[in-house]
Image (tube, rainbow, N blue to C red; front, side, top):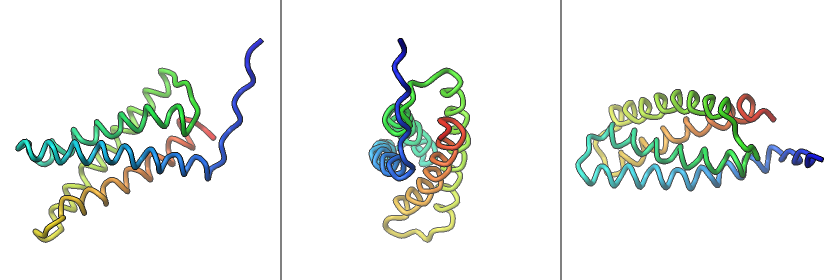
Length: 134
């Protein structure tokens, strides 16, 4: 006999978990970004690689813990498509912010925060309402 499906988590619980996982993923993203910059990598490539490291971390944790999904090939394909879109949004927004901000101390961090915030909002809404349907 199959086990009954797990109870669905409330929106507030999912948002809390998503935010916690996002914090961990942001640390992975930002530290990778900074390490690659320190190694002399071109700023936009460093941002792109940091994004990949952070989003892979977020997907693996969110899939199981936040959205309680075992995952499927279709979900993985959907998430990769979503991450492709948010990759373009995040790297693009980071570039726009770096172009708009005056050369001040912390401009890299400020651009990162704005770009990360946009990508996070897009990811949660699409994952919750489309990919992991709640």
